[in-house]
Image (cartoon, rainbow, N blue to C red; front, side, top):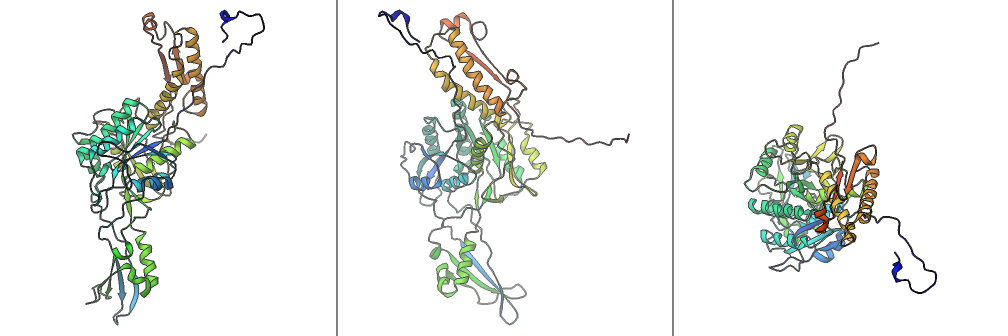
Length: 484
């Protein structure tokens, strides 16, 4: 506005007066940061590589390389079923299973692939080191350095550590607790936690009990994270070390009674069949692509968060959504087991299930934070929507720092925030038939501030929101009606 006291020369002056209130621009929400080991890395023994923003898998490959090729002694088996005369009636090539203990613990490349397959958009990669030679070395201190690097980056809103399940129990819980503490301190991010699954154990509640009852199992800041179970059998192909010469084919004949034909077993590298029996060679190559790659669910969940945020909004619970690029969960969960996963009456550590439902495919079937007994922060979408509004309003309010702490400023701040929340209410994020039922914004002397607050330079704004909550339990009541 024109300062009238500066006018000294006669003439006509133009003064443009701004009557519109400033606006709040909503921050991005579904932006995960992946922390882990990569093929190419600039990390040192004292610091992780600076976070790098990528938009697709090609950018990841250019900057960080590919997966660590597997070399666990995998072999293919060819079984020729014969008649009594020794003639081959049919040939069976079973799909081999990868040894989960021998496979590489470095799964970042596969995790990012699964994220993009499930609708993920831009994300950040924080490399904490290059792959170890045998693929088995993970250092908890390296993940701490990765979180330190992430703390200096403002845009990421989700923390994903897909390799954490391969850490020892103590380091696993300490790493995720550090991530939860960072989310609580910065108040602008959320942690997606993978529950460790023992693949040789089919008792779901054993894994859930170990997760909940460990001595270091998340004492603080559970509202800033959500846990998911079980692992997923993906359709992503393994990368092997020299599959042509490094993978052997064991071939044998089986008699009609199911016994092996004597002296019929032979072993040869895969590439020898390329010229001797090309059809069998192609079949073997196809079977090799069917070897199941099992992954913790957090990368797929991060993609679903990003997709839901983009198509519906951060206020929509990221649940009842199909998981892509998988054959199904590694273990099936029924209603009874999920009931015990969903509600933890002792400590409130809710675990969200990923389930295969008849006729609907594999779905995320849970929407609770790790603090499932808290009435305020029970649901993921409520916590994340508050993060979104808090960060958006915080950034927009910086413009008023050092402005006069008077009624003019208070009116501008209130109008700015009310306009923003009205837009959120219209989008469906807030409950209420009218805006005044959905939220309130209070600021002013006698409302939120005392004279002492003003003397000490404090401008205090109170904001209340009635965020929509998911219909987690839908009850249909049926009864007989007498004819009239």
